[in-house]
Image 1 (cartoon, helix red, strand yellow):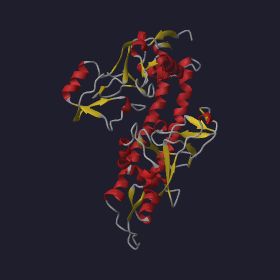
Image 2 (cartoon, rainbow, N blue to C red):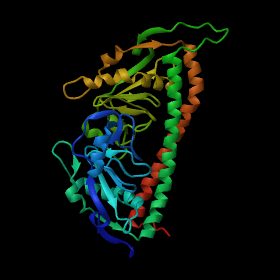
Image 3 (cartoon, rainbow, N blue to C red):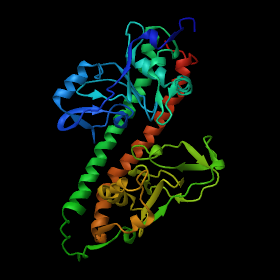
Length: 395
């Protein structure tokens, strides 16, 4: 450890700031303006991003609200420290103040290494416990952020550590992108078959009539119920419990909380929906689990193996389901009776079976990729603190 030295974030960075403290008027077809809500693990999600006029964009660029390549972006407000990543590629956007911009001094610290140094659980805990304020929405206090203590090795060792961890993140990112492509293909085919047009009947087969019905005519539906607070734990005792959108990942939830006294259950491969604050985020259970009051579970009434059809059918109803975000005096919510009253078109069984036969292999590939992602993520998260502390030495 003799090559390692103690420093602070302010000593190894050229700039620590955030984005715009005012939000210009939205302008259709304009330039993207990202907030913390658009952040993901490896970059930004352009879906639903606010766009602003070229004039407002230039003003914000000139005022320092556009990051540079190799800057580190950190979720600063709300979901503090949830997302941290290095800026890569083209920068066609500006940022709101909910995102911190950290500009490394490359003569002192490797940008990729700095990302992992900040993600190190010891550093994350230090920041959350000492540099976060706000009476309502939690936020990093930037004027003190430069005081965050770090212990760093030589630049060459930093590069070696970053290379090991980045190789894992690159594999994870590739699998995520494969999954997004596969899901988009399946979603497109579902819409072509069941929303935009009905498939032609197979010659020699009698085509059942499609009919109107309610959501519960086709799917079993379970509203969640939260267990007693004293049954919660983060040590893996009992079964996983999902309480809402905060637990949801790309396809499967993340195991954060467990309970020893579950009240309502979802079964493996049930479709999960957040039913409050916000309504309509969607996932799939990857094991039997407890669902809290912020989650509902759905499965096909007539065959539990039709989880692929169920998942994409519910996804096709999201515009209608998300309208319930506008209800409620404090936050949006959807009730059991609201779900029961959603009207749907119920296709014939032959069409559903054909869709299952075609799409299930794609969806099973998504599931396999997701298992790999979980394995690689666990390996990365195990290695990260050991590499950052020098417990595992690199050449």
